[in-house]
Length: 134
Image (cartoon, rainbow, N blue to C red; front, side, top):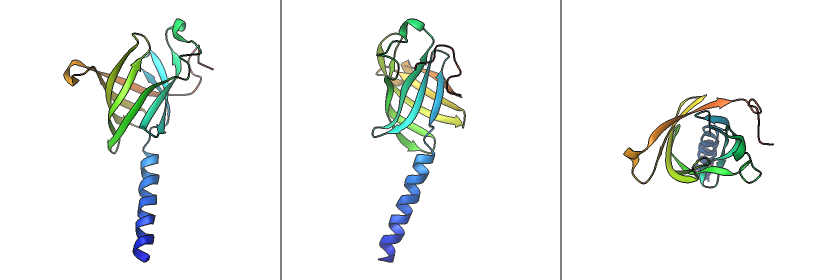
């Protein structure tokens, strides 16, 4: 019984640690979009809160999940996710590494990783950009 309690306690601590490592908050993606990152059943997800292009700030796009399925592969590392680019309406594979509490480096690519590019995500304050989705 003590072993069971110990295992349950350890699992609880692990779950709390995993949740603490989720980079919740608002992240600016290459000054083109801002997403709210959050833990979801598929791993790490992100929904649109701002788009640089005003013509894309539609009710259908604001709040839309455009980042999903990122699975943790270690502290501050995620892979096997998907990213929908609102500008060209294309879905890409994505992996990401948290560089610091306020910076994430994401590798976005089509079917082949080396054909992709690395983009920076920087943490920003909510409602800090003109034309915020709301």
